[in-house]
Length: 181
Image (cartoon, rainbow, N blue to C red):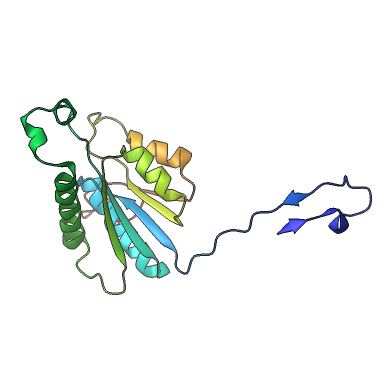
């Protein structure tokens, strides 16, 4: 909606102000990052529950690195990148099927990409109502309470972020499986 000088109150500067109206989507969207780690599997369960509760679409994002040798033309480069993306997407779909056996009422889109996880998830958060990540992925710094991807998502996402811990959820640990801690 555009305001013009005629819309302004007396004493205000005469200028044109452009107000952006939020884009309306038919359904909400929940985005979750999945790398196969226990934490990401718990995040997936949480995200699916949230998507079902909100009657929202669920987008599962799986990111993988392309080894340097592929870019250097070594023998491994014989497998086209599209084939590797398809394999990664099937692997992510398998995790979805294992962790979310009841998919009734859910619209699930599984996306595989070679984009860095932080970039892919933050970009997708621009069109999401909720971004869900595990607290720790497959990174190498086990002593950290929160991984670098989850931290960057919390700092830069365009929507609310839920960080789900892997915890065993067993008797006596006080945590409900699949719930953010």
